[in-house]
Length: 121
Image 1 (tube, rainbow, N blue to C red):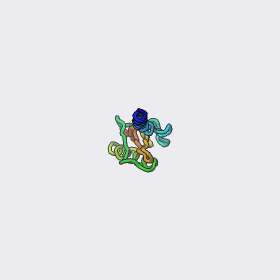
Image 2: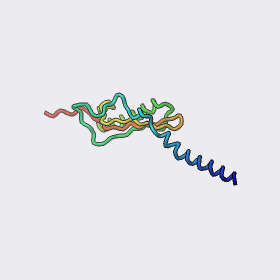
Image 3: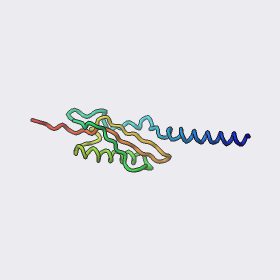
Image 4: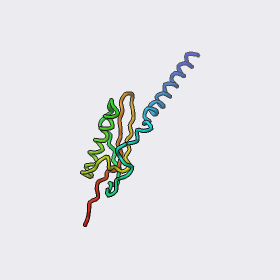
């Protein structure tokens, strides 16, 4: 009987680790959502798209910096398909979120692309 209790306890611990462990690893650090060069809203004189776009780049990277760069590059490709002069620095509501899987990370850049308003005379 003691062997069964020990095995059952080990299985319960393993299941708990499988359920809780990935959830804890997926939580971004407190400062991961901050993009220091982007603003909370578009600069004055800019107009914005009606939807936010998300870019992530392919796969997980061994460096979080590389993962952030891949996410920004993917976002920028999508944003420039809408506005040729779109830039992350003029994004409305920019968010950079990263998740870790062991030693690897994957980041997601989300924001509403904006560009200078066209002047009508």
